[in-house]
Length: 399
Image (cartoon, helix red, strand yellow):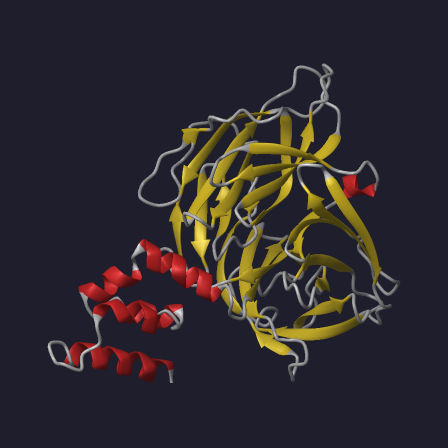
C-alpha cells in the first residue's frame, strides 16, 4: 500500500508536468510531508526537484514537527556482558487499550560498550553513542549515522550531551573534560566545547563561563534545554559531593545551575520527562515485592523549586525476575512509567506500563529481541537491559 501511494503521487507529478492539471511545486511539500521516511527515501530518486525539497532545511524541520504528533517508538539498549557489546532495538508503543498487547521490535546496530561509551536518550529522532575518539550520531529512521569530528583532547574521561534547538532546528553536541582536582574529590569541568551537527562544522569553545561543576550522567533535552547531572563546588578547596542539575540552553549556549532538594532527590538515578517537565527519578530494583517510584518534578528553574511525588506499584507475580523503572512515556495524558526486566530471560521480552492514576500495570510483549539471531547476541546468556527511551520520532536527518 505504501509503495502504491508513493508511485501514485510520483506519477501524478512527473507525467503531468507542463499540463494545466499539474501539481504546483509549492504544494508538493504539503502532500508528501505525511509520508513515512522510507517512502521519502524513494522520492529522492524521482528527480532533483524532489531531492531538493526533501533535503531542504525548512522541510526537514517541518517534517520533524509533524512526526512528533504521530505515534512514537521506544528505543532499547541492551548489553552483552560476555562480549562487551551494546545492542540497539526499537519498537512501537501500543496505545492503552490496544489488543493484543504486543509489538514487534526492529534491530538497528551494535557497538562496543567500553571504554567510556556514551549513549544519549533519543533527542528528536537522533541518538548519540560511541567513545570519545569515535563519537557517532545515529538516526534510527534512516538507519544512517555520521561520525563527528574527533575532539582535540587526550583525555578519556569526557562527557558528551546531545541537544536540539526547536527554534532554529539545530542539533548541537556539548562536550567537556573532567579534570583532576587538586585535592580529593571529583574534577571540575573544563575545556567545554560545542559542535553544531551538519555542514562540516568544527568544535568551538563555549563563550559562556558556567558555574564550577563536575559533570555526570544522566542527561535529557526538553524544549531546547539540555539538562545533565552535576556536582558543584561550594567555594571550599575540596569539591564536595553536592548534587545538582546543570541546564544548557541549546540556542543561546548559556549555562545555569539548578539546586535540588537536599532530601532523597540527591539519590536520583534517571532523568525523564513528566507532564512536559524535567523530572528526577529514583527507584529501587525490585522483584515480587512492591516497587516505589520517587519523582521530583522541576516547577521553577529560576527559583530552584521542585515538587515531590511517590508512587507505589502493585505487587508483581514474577518471583525470579528483577525489575527496574526506566522512564516515563512523555505522554501528558497517560503519564505512564515503563518497567522492564533487568535481564533478558526466555522469549518474549516484555515491558510493563504502570498507570499511576489507575494504579495498574499492563504488559506488552516485545517480539523479535530475545529471538533475534545475531553475532555476539543470541548465544550470550547474560544480557542486560541498559536503557529504554521513549519519544523516538521519524527524522529525515542523514537521508
